[in-house]
Image (cartoon, rainbow, N blue to C red; front, side):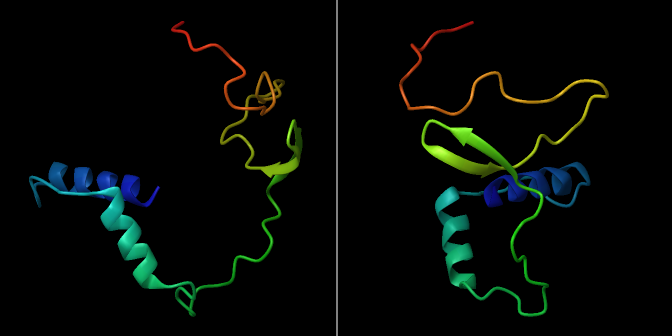
Length: 94
């Protein structure tokens, strides 16, 4: 996610004419995040327990998942099948 945000920022800078290219890597982003340490910015509020996660059942047991980003009135947004073991479906192109 971190590198994705940096790519988006680089694209915005390029569109504004401030920069024409950017060299980004997942490994370098990971290094920067590790260098920040586990304490983070003490001026930022603590996250605590996220109350927006929804309970769900999977073949591995109960989990808490992030809800869908959008809503459609009169329609329940959800996955057609719940999470299961890797390799349970044959790879195919649709």
